[in-house]
Amino acid sequence: MITALLLDLANIVGGFLLGVALLRRLPRVGDDFARFAARVAPFGWVVGVVALVFAGYYLIVHLVSGPHVFHFEVVGLGVGIALLWDRLTGRAARTPATSDRGPTGLVLLLAIFGLIAIVVGIQGLFTPDG
Image (cartoon, rainbow, N blue to C red; front, side, top):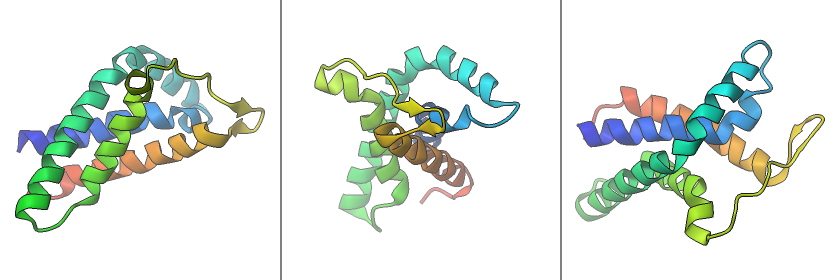
């Protein structure tokens, strides 16, 4: 189903945008990830809206008709809220808290959640709809 594909792609792209703080520390490819993320970041709100809409749709469907709530929906809601947080709260986004050793605090937590969202999105591509 196309809606499941959109949710999976939103999880992957949103996870990439959230996890770029860690991904840019990879040797030889980190700078490329950072440049790509800088190009895609202005459209992060679109990915957040797609994640919220389709995760909410599947959450309602699975709550009403079963069989149970899947982790794809929960991660999709988290990705959507994280990407839209500054628009939802009306506050400007803070600059990333990083040190010489890498991201710290909330940025690190969001980056780890982003990597989890990438894995969940890839898993969703190979999981049959149902």
